[in-house]
Image (cartoon, rainbow, N blue to C red; front, side, top):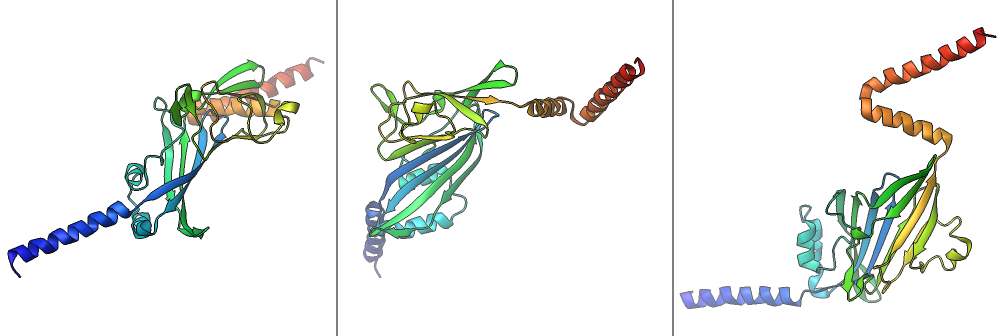
Length: 257
């Protein structure tokens, strides 16, 4: 085979590869951002991206899914910039990040996959003790990383934001009014632990406050946990001294009668 023939074959292979790459396409058709707020001001985030995979992209997706070392930035190059973390805090950071590309399934005659991002973000809420055993939390809106418009951030099309408060917490104030559950504001969000907003919701004036009222037992537990956090193993010595002091005090009180 002559040099020209070899060159032609190489160019033909490269052209075929380029055509295949160009025909590969992905469409992010839905995003669900679930944020579970924790009492330590962190938030556990679970984002699910519904992705329509074109027939020409199926092999590329399956091959990429089997590659365990692909980063989020690499997946963004494959699927598109819509695949991003929508809750971030550059100042405080995040941890326990996981990217979970799901299998391709057939729905409505289309190839559908769900790509899940899971991670924990620090300082999503601020904490203020307003009374004995009463703690008020305020959502930090600077962690939002959604679409930007003329009036600030908003939820892009086909996107749902869901917030879940810690166990035992009570929602104090919310703006704008959640889409789900409907009419929850009429009874002051009593017994409501999860609220959601749908596409197009403006976030520029977003507020979300909740309160945790700690029991006496919880306060005692928190105290000893704080002592252990500061003193480590020596905290057991501190606790033993406190217990002995209480016993000695009771003994003196009984003996004085």
